[in-house]
Length: 368
Image 1 (cartoon, rainbow, N blue to C red):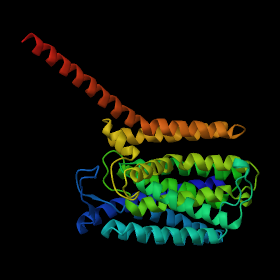
Image 2: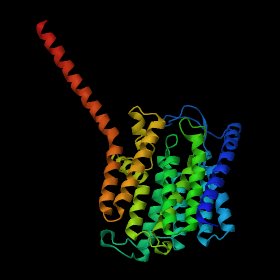
Image 3: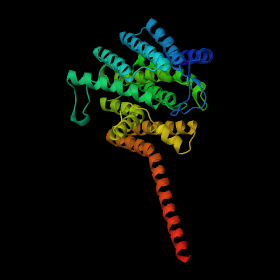
Image 4: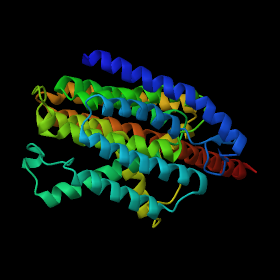
């Protein structure tokens, strides 16, 4: 079967499965009381179903089973096993709130399992003058990367449509890249996940009827990390279309928005002598909504920023990859710190108005 036909079938199958199951899950969740009740940190006003990751996984699973039955490879079994563990973890966490330490332990175990199967960062292809990595460093970088990206997508899932939309863009981009370098199985996985995410977004964007929940954000982050590592493996480029450095810059573009946001927030919490795992409202989506944006505008803004970053990454990747990376970092920093700048501007304005009012009162008192 030709690859473009497989792509269409995978996309449509995952889309249809998720489209059918999502309203069913919404109905069951409301009937059983499996809802996310608003609290002081919530960005929603009414109790909302929060197991949206289940129909997303079902859509992806339907395609994974199809791939396994028609020329799949052994790595899919490990991927499927890891995703199933995360689905169970996410469902339990969405219902009873697991401790962060338990979630992290599970993620580290899964990341080690992936690395032990040879799916690791093995070569930096000249970044910082580094080429092939020692095995122990391969394990450390891979495990850290998988856990970091899994949590980054989990943390950025804070407003309607954001995590799903960023994931949809990533899956399309990675899918196209995998087509170009000749990785059939990973191509199918990417477009299947894109189809499932698009169907889910129909119920989650601009007035969410259901949330992705930890069930969805964990598998989205884990799958993104897995595919990024697969992209960097030399054995995966059967057509020689991209150099190792170009692949790494694509990986950078795919993860920079959620990763930078997570690192920034963690550092701020540590500076304030709080746990980096403590909850607050300082993520980029919170800051954007504080400027007056609704969920739709905030999500669309970050979609645009993410797409712009990926555009520059591809534009510069052929020869000037450092320029692409620098441009991407600049865009992310300016976007994320822009709301802070607005808050500072408002605070300075209030201070000037206060001083002007105080001087005006003092002048009036002199004439009395």
